[in-house]
Image (cartoon, rainbow, N blue to C red; front, side, top):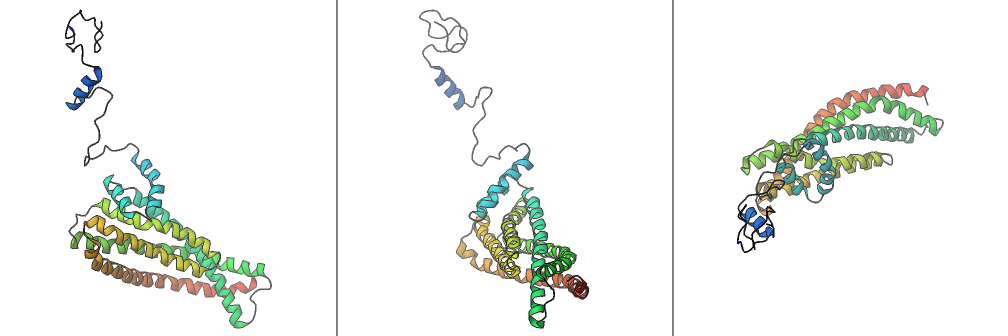
Amino acid sequence: MNCSACGQPIPQGAAVCPVCQTPVNQPVYQQSYARYQQGSYPTGYQQPYAYGQQPAPAENSFLSILAELPRAFVNCFTRPGDVLRQMVERRDLYSCPVVAAVVLILTFLCGIVVMRGFVGVLFGMISAFSGVPLAGSEASMNQGISYIAGRVAPSVGGIAVVCQLISMAVPTIVFLVYICVICKVMFSWELALGFVAVTSLPTVAVALLAMAAALISPWISLILMMCGMAVSYTQACGMLALITGRNDQILMRGKLICVALSVAVTLALCGVAGGLMMGGVVQRIIVLFANVGSLI
């Protein structure tokens, strides 16, 4: 008979192995379980994760976070609080810059597409009020629209980016002041960047839908943008209970104040900044209208 632990021969009638002192009648799995209970794990095994323990940092964290963004995008519409909690727990500092970059690029492209739609609407309004067609054919009309839009749309796209930056920054500042100053929650960059990422993710879908809707009517694009802003504020309010640990009824007044203040400041800053920059664009459109006659 050989020892089940070390494999050495055991004399007949012996109670323990003469080499490793292992009891003859104790199964190996019982020995292993006893070692696990004592915290002695064999080579190749890892201790189980304990709740509250900080997980080990994952390799290629930037790539792993990028891989999680599609799932975060889907969940941000139904479970924004869970998405924020996961970002904070894994100390995610990459999602916010990536999401912000994608949002700003799409906003720039959306501004260009929507501006072309408004130029087409402007051409149609002038023809309707004057009773004189501005072009001899539809092809000539499209050529004139493309001519003007091609020269002013990039500027409008830049204005849209500035307004989008304001729309992202102002609510974040207002809500974080309420969270950290009024509700006494400790500030962290993970919380701030995660808040921006979660509230900005819906803008990705809104910008894509607005570009598609601009092919039908630019007014539909504006409505979609307003709906996207409403979704972002709804998400921000929905995350307050999770962040502060307070009841929604207690937070109701704070939510209303934060939303009202954010909307007022955002519209005021966008109106001032966008109005100042759009003045030059309008002047350029007038000049281009004067010169576009030769094309159409």
